[in-house]
Image (cartoon, rainbow, N blue to C red):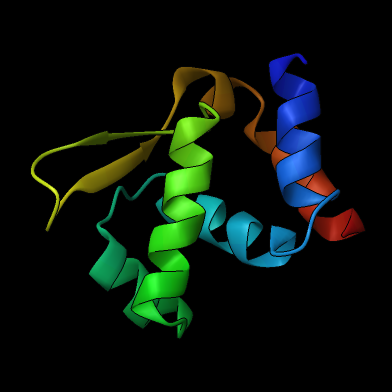
Length: 92
């Protein structure tokens, strides 16, 4: 499965896609850690952790730092297709 198909599945094709799209939008231009994302998006910390794990495992995000306080960034591929990701989140 190509990267574009993976992103489509994560955003528009599976449960939790709306929250994943919100996380991606929040991280775009402003890398953040799980705690700050949970606060900004008014989501449970464990929910955010779950989505960050899925997004990182599938190459949508990259991260840096120790487990607690780990900062998440959009991957290069995600940055390159960010406009398409935004459109997918509107369709969901």
